[in-house]
Image (cartoon, rainbow, N blue to C red; front, side, top):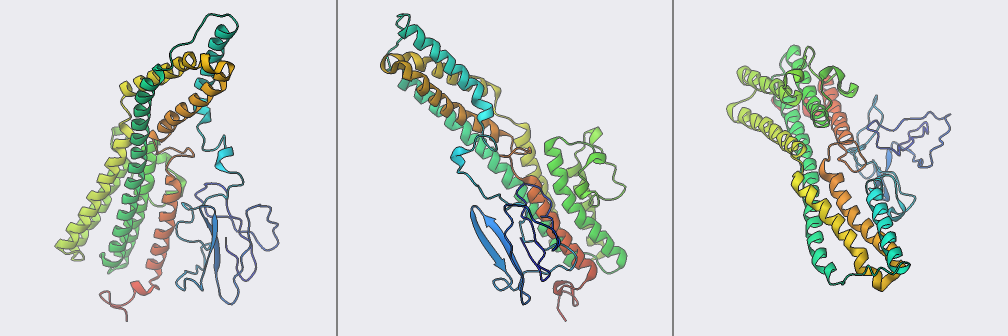
Length: 393
């Protein structure tokens, strides 16, 4: 949150929206409970943000290089991806947002009803439903091993997806730096092409996100990057060609043109081509995660073993606990099915759920920083764009 000399208020967004927080004029009433004013006095810019649950303040006194933008709303690096609403309640009392209760409530309720039936027949009808409790340990080992494997493999997929996205982000940053500084930028036409290619790099991020979410068709792409895709590009997704891979051809052609023009020497062009290869490889890794779910035989057997364990457990506890078996079984089922539900939730991390990778926010942050570099490149007023042959005058 930022304030300027006119004491305009900024409302910290409490959602995961990828857009920057809205700026309110000085005569606008701020009704947000999370708004906390900060002031800029004596040419000092202060930005308040949350890291986890701890509020911190970034000011120009702490960081003299904190940029001032004349036209764009002030922000800070990773403004969207690091945004987190302060929690009013501990996570222990959260049952809706981000929780998996909606996934497990039906099996837990069914096992609770089954346990009630077993206890009723044993206690009220005298059928003697009890079994030796020695059965429980042997089944517990199998259930525990299967749940551990399920969750470890699911989180490995989640972490692999996040690592792949960060690899693409890093590659886009590296290629942007090389193109803006070392590209063939002698004439105005060359500079326009460099700008177009750098925008195409950002478009690759959006294309990867839409590809993994199954949002096909270039005509329906996100308006946030409508000006990033090269004009005239029709796309061939209806013919089976993915847009991220197709956009990489635009980047490779620019590198080849830079070699012909003498802007890129052989070692540098090889390095740039390697960066493009790295981008495609990271995209392929994310595509593998998307298209390779946990084998169905493992899912079937795990669910059957878990259901069998929770069905046998009431017979082993009814003699010792009686009617108390019902809440105990419900608690055990809640725990075990919750662990299994977490594995299902993390298996495909590229969606838009609360527990998925925040792809929209990460990409929006990269888009914002690349557009700032492009604006400086167009004006040529930054120190790293001035001078001859990279030497500042």
